[in-house]
Every structure is written in structure tokens, then in C-alpha cells.
Amino acid sequence: MPTILRAKCIVAGDAGVGKSSICQVFHSDSAQFPKNYTMTTSVELLVKPVNIPDSRDQVEMYMYDSAGKEIFSENVIKFWDHPSVVMIVYDVTDETSFSSCIKWLERVRAMKSQTNIPGVLIANKIDLDQRRLISPKEGKDLAMSNGLEYFECSAKEMQNVDTPFFYMAHEFHKMYQERLQVYSSLA
Amino acid sequence: MFDVALASGGAQIALSTSSDDSHPPEHMIDGTDETFWTTTGLYPQEVIVRFQALMSINSVELSSYDVQNIALETSESDSIDSFEPLAEKEVERTDHQLQTVEVSVGERRAQCLRIIINSGYDHFVAVHRLKVNGKALHG
Ligand SMILES: Nc1nc2c(ncn2[C@@H]2O[C@H](COP(=O)(O)OP(=O)(O)O)[C@@H](O)[C@H]2O)c(=O)[nH]1
Ligand SMILES: [Mg+2]
Image (cartoon, rainbow over all chains, first blue to last red; front, side, top):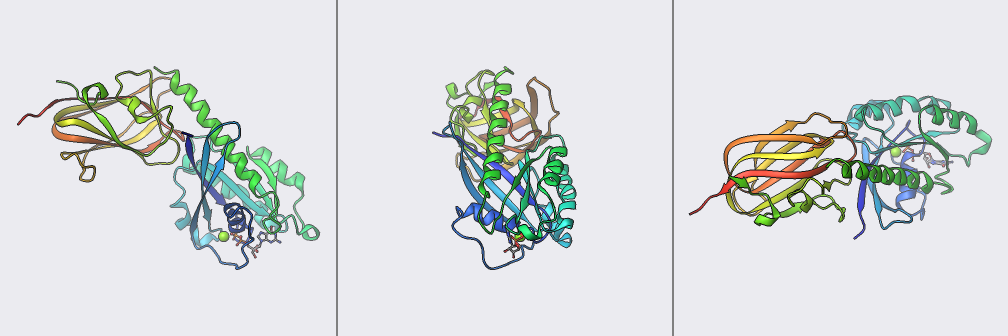
């Protein structure tokens, strides 16, 4: 029987950057881009299994698509205990959303400060090339200095949305393998 | 008085929330520290151990790793739905050695023991051994 790991993935970032679109595109196997714009009031949970190559294992991603409006933040944080992995999203056409990333990351990491939480920084809406304000270099630098892996995507064009989730699932699976080594050495 | 949670003495795992077949919850009750049960992500996690018969238990001992908060409950019946709280404990973190969790319970009648891991110091925890000191109640 394959092992099924479960990872709680907190998806955070300012309102409107595309968090719900990204989650829904990934969740629905990129079959559709959500057309109706509904604002998440606190947290929406979506679950999607990810197969780990070269193993029979699977990581079930529990995506906590979290509202970005500040007035909801108390409500949102209630759902964030024991995060496994974190996805911070910004909109490449919106400077404020980029400068908010640190704040979101710190809030998630504060939930489990003694534990390593693998994470990704997502530059979304790269289809809006003409209006882009945040360069790839700025994104990469921010990711690097905060221990995140950098990815660019367009939820609208369904481009590169899956890759960051696969990355997080891998990292989580790797941590599990490492833990097993530790547990085996303890007897 | 003896360990009533040994598989070799008829104890069984009635339920568990995690799923690595290489490290199943049966490894907690096989009488050795060498093997272990692991959780596979998310909290809380739980295991229910059913003893061979209704027991009178005096203490529960666990050897574990990265457990932070643990709660124990017991049931006098062999169905797994009528549990009563037994104890809740914060466990200190250890570095590269097993945690020892000991709970004395006076005397408690139990056929099932439910172990709830409310939180851990890492994404996963392991329990290498469960020991329940008690004796069978006759009549
Ligand atoms: N052009 C473009 N628009 C997007 C993209 N992703 C999301 N949007 C739009 O941005 C708006 C906010 O998206 P939503 O997923 O609700 O953002 P959230 O508040 O972060 O959950 C919606 O109008 C989406 O259609 C993208 O990659 N490109
Ligand atoms: Mg949303």
C-alpha cells in the first residue's frame, strides 16, 4: 500500500493577487479558469492528491485558500495552526502586494516557529506583461533572502500553476523520509 | 500487574488516523522500542487500542519522539464511541533520544484506550512503544 502523507498548505497574500484562482486551477487539473469573481471571506479548503515520482507515495495537499483583506485576518489565522508548507502569492502588476509578502510569510511562520516550513513565493499574472512592475530579479531576491523557492505563473493562462505545488509536495515527502531516519536511530 | 497493551497478550489496534504500512500503529504494541508508529501529517492524530478484556489499569507509558501535547481517554466498553478523558499532558522536546511519557491513573476500568496527539514539535511524530500496566477484571 502506498503511503499517503497529508500537508496543510497555507496560501496567503493580498486580496486580488490570484490565490483562489491558483488553488482552483490546480485543484481542477487546469480544466478551467474560474470566471466568477467571488471574494473569499475567510478560508476555503481544497484537497488535491499529488503523486511523488519514483515512489508509490502520495501527498494530499490541503490548500487553505485564505482571505487577503486585513479585516478578516483574525478569522483567517484561526485556521492556520500547524502549517506544513506555505505559498505566498503576489501580483506582478501590484507593488503593494509584493511588499506585503513578508508580512504574510511572518504570520504563517509564527504559527510554528520551531519547525521548518518549506515555502514558495509566487509571482502571479505574468500574462499581464505590459503592466508588469515587479521584475523576476526582485522576486527571486525576496524569495532567496527568505528561504522560499521562487515561481512565476499565470492562473489565467493556466501556466505553471502546478509546479509550485509539486515542489512543496516533494519537500514535504523528503522531510518525512528524513524523519523516518531519525526515528529509526532512536531505539 | 503486567503490560495489557501487548499484541502478544491479545491487545489490538482498533483505529488509527495515519497510513504508512511500514510503520503501522501495531508497532507500538509489539513489545519493542526498535519499531515505531509514525503519523503522516496534520494534527490531531489518534490511535485506539483495544485490550483483550476489560482491564483495571494503573499507569500508561509511552516512548515517543516530537510529541508536544497528548491526551488519553478510556472506554469501558469495547465499542469505540463512549470515551472519557483520562489525562492530558505537555511533553518536553528531546534531542535525538526518545521521550518518556508517564501517566499514573490510580485505578481505571478500561477496555479501550484512545491516544490523541494534539500537537507535535515537528510535522510528524513517532511512538515507539506503548505500555499499559494493569490486570484483567474477572467476573
Ligand atoms: N490577468 C490575470 N488575472 C488573474 C490571474 N489570476 C487571477 N486573476 C484575476 O484576478 C482577480 C482576483 O483573483 P482571485 O483568485 O480571486 O484572487 P485572491 O483574492 O487572491 O483569491 C480575478 O479577477 C481573477 O480573474 C492571472 O494569472 N492573470
Ligand atoms: Mg480568494
